[in-house]
Image (cartoon, rainbow, N blue to C red; front, side, top):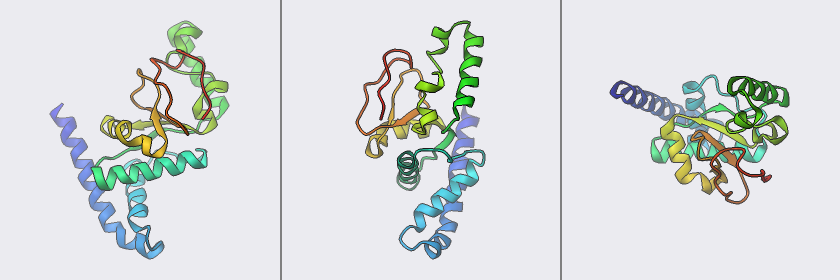
Amino acid sequence: MVAVAIKVRFFQVVTRVVAVLLVPVGFCRAPGRGRFLACQWALSLRFPAEDLRGLAPETLAAFTRARAEAFWRGGQLIGLTSGYRTAREQCRIFAEEVWRTGSVQAARRRVLPPEESSHVRGYGLDVRPTEGARWLERHGWRYGLYRVYDNEWWHFEYRTAAPTRLPHPDAAPRRRP
C-alpha cells in the first residue's frame, strides 16, 4: 500500500512539474488560458491512453474544467478510463457481463445495454485514480458531474440537475440529462 501511495505521489509531482514547464507555451498559444492548456497537455502525457473524442460537448467542457481545477487547486490528477462508447462496443461489454454473471439481471447491476447507457450518449465518464474520483465526488457538482451509483466509485455523468444516487445501474428507471 505504501508503494502505491509513493507511486501516485511521484506521478502527481512529475505531472505538476511538466505542467508548470508548459505554462509559458500555453500562454503563447492562448493568452488567458495558458494554465488550462498546460494542465490538459500534462494530463494527456500522464494518461496517454485516454480518449476524449465522442463525449457530448457539455460533458467534455465540464470534465476538462473540473480536472483543471482539481489539478491546479487540489493537486489531484483525474484521468479518463472510459468515456464515449459506440452502441456496438457497449453491446459487447454488456454481452460479456451477461456471460460472466450468468444473467441479464445480474449484468445490469454493473453494465447497461446500449439504449440505456450514458456512455453511448456521450454523458458517461469512468475516471481514475480513486483519489481523483473522490475529488470529483466532492466538487464535481460545480460542473454538472455527479457520481450516480453507489457501487461504481469511478462512474460519473454529466447532468443538468443533481440525480438521486442509486445503489446500482438497474435500481430504477434512468433519467436523461
